[in-house]
Image (cartoon, rainbow, N blue to C red; front, side, top):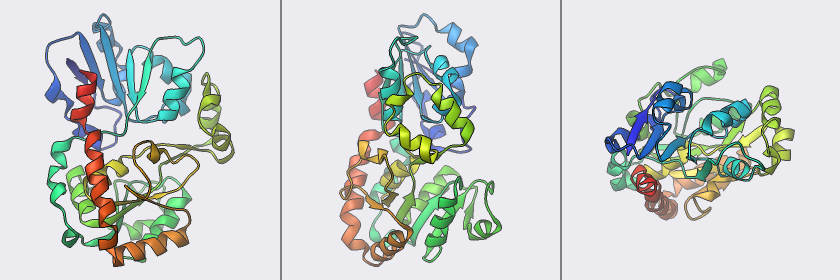
Length: 314
C-alpha cells in the first residue's frame, strides 16, 4: 500500500503527526492511503494516483469540514473510502440521495499509535501526582468555567496558545506549549481528564452547514441550529484511556463518546459544574474506588490503535 503524507493543516505537535503511517508505506499502488488534512487539496498528487483501485483518506477533523460547506465534501469525493471520526457526518453523506460520488464514509474512533503509549500500561495509582487535567484551547465560555472549577484542586491546565484567553485564564495556565510526549507524560500522572466533545459554531458555520445536502439527517440538527454546537470526538478521550487516566466527560445532546466507550464502565459523565467539582473531589480522594474504570478503559482502547486500523484497510 502506498502512503502519502501531507502534514499541512494539522495542529502543532498533535497526535495525528504521531500516527507514523509512513511505516506502512511500500511501492504497491493498488491501494493508496492519504494522510494529513491538506491531502484533500493536493490535486497534483491526486492526479498521479487517479487510477489506483482504491484511494483512502483518514479524516480526523469531521465535522469541522462540514461547517465550511459543500466544497469540502466535493474535494473528498475523489476517495473511494473516507475513515471519519464523526458517525453522524458519515450517516449524512452515506445516505445523501443522488450522491455525486460513490465515496463510502466509515466511522472510526480517533486512532492512536500504540508504540507511543505502551509504557503507560504500567502506570499505577502511586504514579498519580495531579487530581485533574485539561489540555487544549478555550473555544467557549464553558471552558472558562471548567478551568475555574479545576483550579480549586491540584490541577494541570496545558495549552499551546493564549488565543481567546482572558487575563484570568492566562494566569491559570500551568503548562505551555508542551510536546505531545510531554503532554502524555503529564496526562499519565493525572487522576482525571475532563472535557467536552463539542464543536462551537458561529453564524457563518450555520449558514454553510445548511448548504450541505442531506444535512437534516445529522443527529439532533435542530439543536445545532438552536445552540450553535455540533458533536466532535476529541483526541483527549483516547489519549486519557491510553494513559490510564479517568475520563470525566460533559454529558451533552449527542454523547458521541458512547459510540466507542461505555458510560460507568469506561468513563463517567458530569452535567453541571457543581457536580463536576463534587466528582473531582470524590474521585481524587478515593481513587482506588474508580481504578477499575481506568483499567477497563485502558484495555478497551487498545482496539482503536493505528495498527488495527491499518489491518482493516489492508
